[in-house]
Image (cartoon, rainbow, N blue to C red; front, side):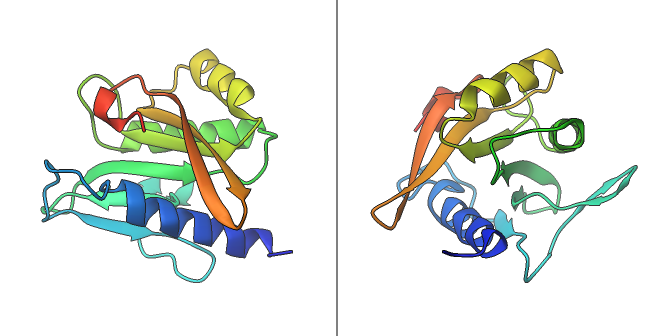
Length: 153
């Protein structure tokens, strides 16, 4: 079995490579940079009041400002500290059309609890997704996309 830290890094790298941008996305600004933080390399952090906060994936605009971020959760159990981390990432990331461009990826089966916690805590998010490993491949499923319809895939 692959170590959880290693698996999280692999999942984040696949998400970054295939969703930020989507392979066929025609309106992506190529001056943007998509970065991945994993157990080996922490290359970008939000400067949060409680200390540096490293999202799994961050997309920077050409001027260095934050466009969007994504966080990969490995456990389907979420505590108060996890929810506060989501809230901080949402507050600090860029705006979409209507809400902050924060994307949350949770293990399949944890989506109902994650959605309830996001909503109950007033956390703005652009997308809630599940992840699962099937036949050696990462399978992502959109659950809810409150911002841009084109992101619901």
